[in-house]
Length: 308
Image (cartoon, rainbow, N blue to C red):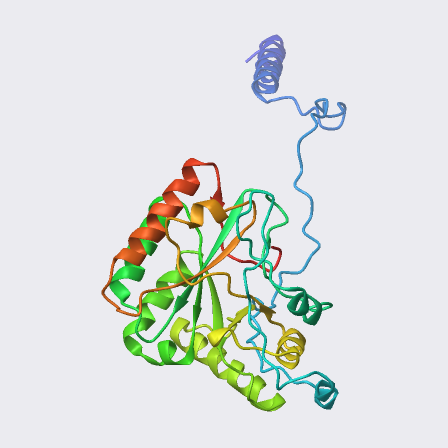
């Protein structure tokens, strides 16, 4: 082969090689990482949940504190109060319309001076409240109590019920007590403590509280109101009952009847004994009729409370 042919062939080979190299360079992606800074998009504010810096609580829910029997350290001081002379409520006084009112004679008013008690007008938040206190006795016929509770529930009426030890001991009455409590009525205790020693009175009231707790299955339950049995009480009773957390509530009349309407005024407290006959529904009728009349007149019927 001639020399010129070799030269031409070499040039052709070089051209082909250059074409191949250039073509390969075009197919390869350009690496811009060294020559270009990355583009950072403008930041957009985002809501960030605050860091929880508080350790999760490991404390158990607070356990309600059971009621405890009152302890009177200065019990001997109650010797200074008369204990042998019981007082009784009377209704001698008249109001401007010549109706009997709940306040009694000046001797009793003087004897109660300085004590925390309820004789009338217990309400302070409303001028139209009427307070009916129903005495539950061993002979109380439960069907009549149920009638009153049914009526009270239907008409959004609240009442106060006072039970003695005999009533609480009878298991037939326990469901009534539970219903009274569950429906928001007030429960209280009653009894004649006038002949008891100081400690005897404390023990007697605590026995009633334990009966309530057992019936309600609630060791935190404690009543705040007491009413005398047979209207007997002394200054010693009132002083000691106040000391251990009770507000004594006194009797006005033993029945609600057709005359009660004329004795009704803002805040009056009426105390009612259910019929001793047990199955006599006339007492219940009188209570229901009276409450119906009171509601129509704009009165409200409230249970006793510690802020009354």
